[in-house]
Amino acid sequence: MSLLPDPAELTAVADRIAGHAAAARERAIRLEHAVAATEWRGFAAGAFFAEAQMATSALRSAAARLDTAADALRRHAERVGALIAHVVRLGQDGLELLGDTFRHPDEVLPDAARLAGDAVDLVGDGASAVRGAVGDVVGVVGVVRDLGLW
Amino acid sequence: MTALAGRFGDVARETLGSATGLSGYLLDPGLLVSSWLDPIGYAAFETELLAALGGWRGLCWAGLACGGLDGELRFAATTYAEVDRLETAAHDVVLGSLLAFPAAVEGGLVLARTGDPVRAAEAVLAADPELADLVITALGVPSTLQALAHEVGDGHGVAVDTGTDDVGAAGRPPRQLTDLLADLAQRNADDRHGMIDVRILTLPDGTRRAIVDITGTRSWTPLPTADVTSLTTDGRALVGEQTAYEQGVLAAMHRAGVRPADDVLLVGHSEGGLVAVNAARDAVANGTFNVTHVVTAGAPLGLIAGSLPSSVQLLALENERDVVPHLDGKENPDRVNVTTATTEHGDGTVTGDHTITGAYLPIAADVQASSNRSIRDFLTGADGFFRASSVETRTFQISRRY
Image (cartoon, rainbow over all chains, first blue to last red; front, top):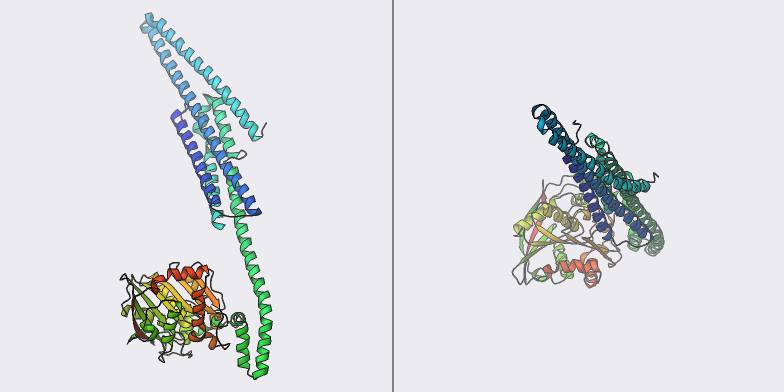
């Protein structure tokens, strides 16, 4: 297993989770049609319809949450992808600077400037990730509250 | 109710299976390795997925709710069926007790008046034929008949062409239910045993239909005999077995020129009704003939009517006072394609309450005039058999060979 994650694989997992969400919605529709086709009347029928409605709305609610989880994973994959790209570029520019220090000392200064630019980009990405994460944290707090853990 | 329970059960299984599969992503190493680059984003995803799977109204909750509904519906369906059974049983006991008493009084009066125990027994059964169900079941009559029939070989059926018949009802295309019974009575009046007829009807538009009339028991011997109407046929046909009589009927249909595409109506009295139902089932199952309708008069069909395919419509005429339809010890099944029409005619004797002319012709007239929805549906469906412009009736004698 590589130490570097594969953003494409993360996106594929997000797509699979979204597929499960669509399937849950389709099951809810299927059950709603089956229940609507009955012509039951009376107290027991009313109680059953209420329970069935709770079950199908739970399926829809679960589907919506799976979509949210899939979106969170996609955002995570985008950030991971951007960070990996910058780290790789920083490494490449660092190696180039090291080579130029010995072979072309006159180009050291532009290389160092580019390296500094890469570092600034990386810090910028980090800051952007933190800003995005703050939004995620707010979402997580909401979820944790929903779960009754806080 | 059970079908709907099955749907909820299916969704429960699919949903819980989906939840199990998705829970693998919570600890997936490929995802975990991404957490060091964006730990907060990873944590956000994990929390959302956990909530979607295990949270309130999450996937597991929904799956379990559907599973619960599956169980509730199945329990309710079982309870309804059990209550229905108990209600029917209680109804039978109460009604049976109420009717048995006057029947016993009636029998006592006849015995006192005539001193004839057979007449008295006839009077009791005529007053309360349901008693016959109880007595016959208690005596094990259906299983005894079957066991005896199995001890005697049935051989194979042979159809001998005895010519055409254009006299009386046989020479006229039927226009209503009573015409069918009238022709069956005409065949039954023949002194020869095992007589049937095959009637080819031609409609004004040139299409064809076929009606087959099958007569009932004429021989009461339980021993091997060439007479196909003997008790061997009763014992086997009562429980749905193919018989030599049925083979002979199907052979006669072939010889009379009935085609596989012709709509066919089988009409049978008593044992002939048993043979008609079994022949309809077998002919449709192997595609030999397109039997669409069966009319029986005074036949005990409780053990076999349920085996008819749904494409075959059955109208079972039963005389309330007739003991013979009770010989199976079981009610006819409650199915969409089985219509049992019961009224009361006859002279109060065991034989008189079972005859075609004395009991079942008047019953056919009652049924023809009925506004009952099932009966009207049957007659409307059989309309093609009552619109022919010409008919050719061929008669056959069916016998058994060993």
